[in-house]
Figure 1 (cartoon, helix red, strand yellow):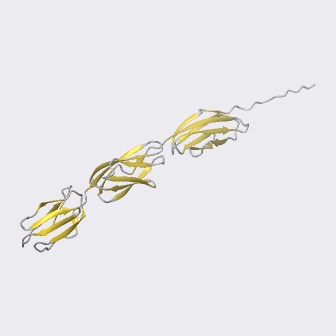
Figure 2 (spheres, rainbow, N blue to C red):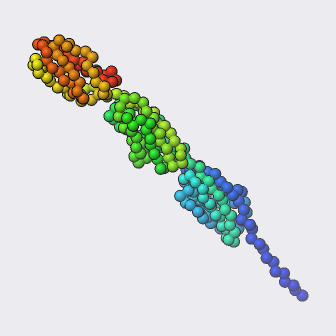
Length: 239
């Protein structure tokens, strides 16, 4: 005599050690599969935020960009489990946060880490201007002084660059002039820092005036003398 028993073996439930993960951008976290039916596959809702791979009986999750996404784990019996992944933003860092630069010059400060979508804002565009150029900040010095440039990314991370602008040297197109009595010679100021004056000259021999960026010298009496030109940064040149 025989009797038959029908046995139904239920598949394991698919369970994970945790269903939420926080990971830094460019870092990785692993989640152990605590029960399941093998042959695991993965689907990531947004691969721009994170990627996932099976490593043995673990799900390895790598952060790519700040935000949230879901990873769905599936086994051979179509059992599924979800992991909610929060990717924390990168820190924002620059190759340097302080620099000294000559007026009229420019330099590029490289952004070494961040979350894209960069902006740069100078607190004083009369002294320093700043603009994003690729993965860097192009800083152009305009006038002597100090100004801060604030760099910000898409995750609202921000960092400041303190920029010290050294003044222009004061130069003229010629430092020797011959002028007849009653006539006028002009000397062009090539570079300088504005606010020009002529604090020192012999007004018995010449009359001197600053007109824009030009030194006008009028001869009054025969002889030799010198004229000192000065700017707002106390730079001087002698004619």
